Length: 386
Image (cartoon, rainbow, N blue to C red; front, side):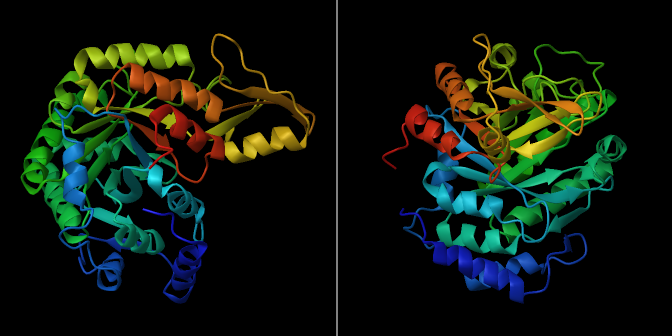
């Protein structure tokens, strides 16, 4: 379909300004949530249109995909943050699925949601298959103890599954993405049991079950970050297993590539031995990290990293063995080291997705990426004619 005009962006932004400000949506208490307003303004697609069901079927295991699918993550960091919305509208023809970082789940299995009304209006009008992302991110980090409380108690797991089932049906989602992170390793079996039971709820209604999992090159069951994730067992139940192949180096550690090619290949070699390739989505970063010497790092968008280097005449270096871009600058008496992903480095990862016969790629997150990322998607995934 043609890319919608800028008038749509103006319309949804103006609508968001005249409506009450975004706030939490407590789905455990009130299912007539503000997000449902979108359903009354823009009804679901009618039979004969490009329906969610057909696109869901294309993502099912066992289908021989002619090209990797593209999943983009949608998030708003603050009220009025429409960077992701602008990316969705501008790159609609490249996106097969969108995952909304929107719904928090607590230890008792109760959901509360962020109101993304402008996006919800647009995704209904455009008919974009959208996956509701369920996460345990709270107060600046992923909550390990909340994850333990949720998974260790069968009643809490059942309550969560029921709430998720109501959510996807009530708000017309194509499925869900489970993004539980920092899960204690002793919850490994309970996490698998939760995913298996969730599939039993979603699959009969034609809903997709996706899961974001930590990237790893071996199974260390004692790891506080990845030990709870049994790739082989989880791979039996999920339709999409999205490898979080980013943050090889992160802000609390030393500087380095966000995702070196060597590391990504090791992760793929491990994962593809255990999980059907058509279910695996390769994660690609759309952001940058900056490490001031002797201090904790911080994040930038890829757009900011690229423009900062250009505007300040800085030399960008791409080592031959791992051509992810990096550069250095001096500020406030400190040397800063910057690593990021752009279209050129993403191009190699897109080629890996094709080479390995993966089901797709996933961009974290929409609105941070540089335009050259989508140019790479066009050429490497053959989408220029869509």
